[in-house]
Image (cartoon, rainbow, N blue to C red; front, side, top):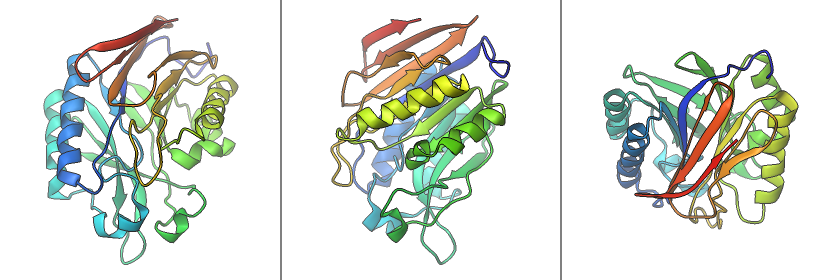
Length: 263
C-alpha cells in the first residue's frame, strides 16, 4: 500500500441520480432522501454527479445559478447536520456579474459549506461557465478526499496533484455519456493505478442536457482494480469502505441491493 494511504477509510457513497431539469427544489429533496439512505447504511460522505441540483443545462446555468448560502439549499445543510454526513452536490455557482462557475458544494456535518469550483472546462462549456479555482480536500474522519468535476479527470496533472497533496480518495462528480464511458473509465482506472489512489465516480443515471448518460458509477481501488460498479443507468447508491486494507462495496437500488462485490 502506498505510504499516503491508510488501511481504513470511512464508509462513503456515490449517488447515481436521475435529475429533473432545472427543478432545484425537487432535486434538493431527492438528494436529502438519498443522503439519509446512505447514512442509514453507515456512509460518512455521499458524492453526487456534476450539476446534480439543476441537471446539466448550460443554457439555463445563469438563470439557475446559486450562492452557497441560498435558502433553497437549507434542507441539504440540515440533512448533513442531522445525519452526520458530508454531502457533495453539484450546482452552477454565482460569480459576480460574470458567467457562473461549475461547483461542487459540500454540506458539512458541523453546518458549514465548503466550495470547490471546476478548473478545467469541457470544450464548449466556456460559453456558459467560467473556469474555477479548485478547492481544498475534504477531511472525513481523518481521511483526505480530493474532489474532481467531470472534464478534470481528463487532465493527468489534476489527479497527480491530488495524490501529491496526500489524498486518500479521489472522488469525481461527472456527466459521462454512453459514447464516452469506456474512455473515461479507462482514465479513472489509470489514475488509480498510477497514483495508488482509490477513485470513486458518481455519474447520472438518466438523460440530462441532451446527453444519454451511461450510469455505471464505480469505484477502483489503489491498484486500479474495479471494486464495484452500477450495472447501468437508473437511480442507485454505491456504498463502500476499506477496513484493514480490504474493500467492501455494495450497489443499492433506491430500496434494495442490486449487486455486491468484495476484494
